[in-house]
Image (cartoon, rainbow, N blue to C red):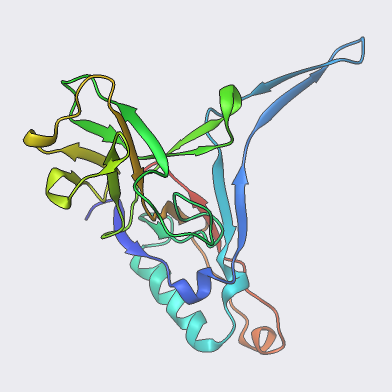
Length: 212
C-alpha cells in the first residue's frame, strides 16, 4: 500500500477548518541590540485543524472513517486549502498565463508546476505537486496549448510537453491550475466525548503538510 493516498479529505469539513502556512526563523539578539535572523526552512509548511469543521455527528463519523482508512499518521492525503487552492486569485478562474513555470531551451520537455507569492527578487516560489484533474492549462509565449500538446502528472505536478510541442529556446512557459495540499494527520489518536460534543466542544484533528 503506498504511503500517499490520492484522495481528498471531506470538503465540507475542510471548509470550516483553521490553519495556514508557518515558517521557522532563528533570531539571535546581539549585545548591540541588533538582531541576526536566519530562516531554518527553505519552504513554508502548512498546518490545519480539521476539528473546527466538524459540525454534526455525520461529519464526525466521516472524519473518523477517513482517519482509520489512512491508518492515522501512516498515509498522506490531499487537502483543499479554502484560501489558497488556485494559480490565481480566489475570486478568479485559472488561466493558462497565470504562473511562469519555466523557459524553454529546445531540449527540456518536463517542467514543474509552481506558484509565485509576491514579485521581484523577494518573491517566493512554491512547487505545486498535487494539481487537480482537468484544471491544468498551459501556454507557450502567451498562446494556450491544446491538451494534446502536453500532459500533467497529477501525483507530482510535472508538465511534460509532447514531441511536436517541445519548447524552443527562450520560450516562456506558463500554466494555470487548481491544486490540493499534500498532508497527513498529525496525531495517531482522535479522542471524542459525545456528551461534550453535543454541548459544543470540538475535537482536535491536527493536519500537517508533507512532501509526498
